[in-house]
Structures are given as structure tokens and as C-alpha cells.
Image 1: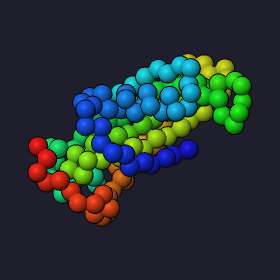
Image 2: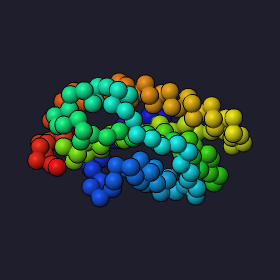
Image 3: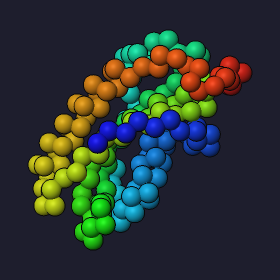
Image 4: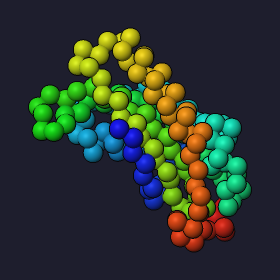
Length: 151
């Protein structure tokens, strides 16, 4: 599944920690008994061209982060927690005190061996890259008034 959320900005969280914080929040919401971050990095502006090309603030204010991680999740009242690979993209938008969170959920087989996880990581990374490249905000007023005085 693919989920896009607009969240209130986590003011006290440094940019470098935001993806891990939101991954942890997802694990807690999913009642995941385990969670493991597999990959995390900051995206370059050219990887998010439509979002970074014309924001209503200095482009240096924006930052984009991805994280891939493994959780175990019991769905639909099942007793067995199954492995799920989560890929997240976070766009920090301080001028509108918001964050865009794009989450891809990729359930794995119960016997998910290392090869299966690696293939799912590559598949998810490719899809996330495609989504990141096409992500655009057509009307910034959807966030309400921006805060151009933010430093």
C-alpha cells in the first residue's frame, strides 16, 4: 500500500532524525514487537525536482529523507506478526510547519530470506524514487498561511 500524510512539523526533531522518528511512530502504531532500520539517507534536491524547484521559501529550508526498515505486524486480528518492509519519504516543510510523509508498505513472506528482503528493498527504493521525482505541491495555500519569518 501507499499512504501520503500531511503531518504537523516535529519542531524539536533534527532533520537527521525525522525519518527514524516517524518509522518508530509507525512501529508503535502497528504494535510491532520488532523494528530495524535497514537504510536511511538524505535525498538530493535533484531527486525531488518538483518539490524543490519552486517552494514559497528558500530552498535551503527544505530537506528530504528516506528510510527503509523492517517491522513485524499482525494484521486483521491475526496472532502471528508478519514481516513488513516499510519505505518512507519525509519532506520537511518548515515554512508551513508541516511534513509530508509518504509510506510504502511491502509485506514479505513469513520465511523472508535475505534474498527476498534485498529484492524487496530494491523494488521499494525504485518505486520511492519514482514517487519522489513526481511529488509536487500545486497549491501551497492548502497548508494555510505560510510563516515566512521562520528562521
